[in-house]
Image (cartoon, rainbow over all chains, first blue to last red; front, side, top):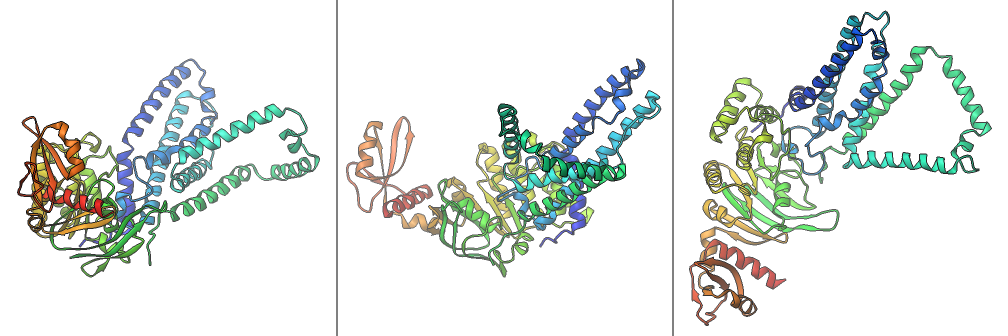
Length: 242
Length: 292
């Protein structure tokens, strides 16, 4: 009779197997970074490297963190009678262990990315290169948790993503179509009461220290991501007739 | 012994996949035959703790499979039709990973288990190759290797020979026969020959119900004197279908040879024939159709 593996063993195994299953993605990222390094190297030689070090790429890093769970769970049957559920491992533990394993490698990749930019910035000789916002790991973690929660909660997450994007585009078109008429969104958003509330909130917000202005929304996102993941993981628990 | 009592399963869309299935499955190879959509895979998944039947009970020894799924998983080896996990991982790494998750903790034990299974399934030479590069036969052999990790007492193999060439199939069936000497092995398939070659006991499942259960030789004996054969011209087939219960047709030297089910000599040139398991299987399906 098999023993039941401990949670620690399951986590260690997930870290190991997720790394092995992401080798292709790691190679693609390495090739992209090599090409970008070459381009930046040429810019450094020409003395035009400044724009590469203004932290503008963090939006790309955020999108990567959001869609990265798709790579972590690729080819896994997340719903229905998945083969892995016949193993003597608690289903919910397996889900959390996999998410954690993905996060470990995401943080490793982030650290590698920062080290890469730091090395290039040293080569560029710039006085104050902006490489990392201090709460970047938290922000990346929050987006990864939200991405994982979406993937684990929905059977067809891509359809939901595309549907949400479609609705946003339609709303944009609607707004353009309504222009400045009485039903335009602008009329709602520029209502005097709303503007007054928004103004007061903005003033209060700006009085907070710069660090807090960035950290508070990040922490809120992190909490939302954590709760969303917990709720999504509930779908993967053992569901037995008692 | 695996005991199923009055197992029924209705999917949320209202499809009744299993309808009061009761079986006693002893140690050894047990064949579960049935056409596509008969409910075989649903039954396999219920036994493998992947689905909870809406009614009935399943016991394996002293374990209540429905209430204690974790207990069963500790003794279970399952080869599903498809286990699409980590295609880029090598066979060795994947087996090692699954061995850890099945509770083979000690590194030396695990190494010995994985290497022995790779040799046993003839995959040693491709142990470093990614699973995505495996042929159908190699995948099936890998599937049986992972199912055997940790010496399971209950092994479930779902349509294992589909897509295998004759040599691969033969090798695979020999392997199953060796394994089946000491544990319960349930072989779910729609290939009659697989069951005829391997299983001392079997059941036929159709539309979620057990139509027939027993030892293949006994079942064949019970059909004695009811199967009749005749070589015909192709154009006669439709007429004969209207007159008789045609079980099977096959081509032999350019002629069509048909087998029909009849309690008495149908005359018209038909001769009695020694029934095979295929005749038994088709006869049970025909009788079920007639009863419906």
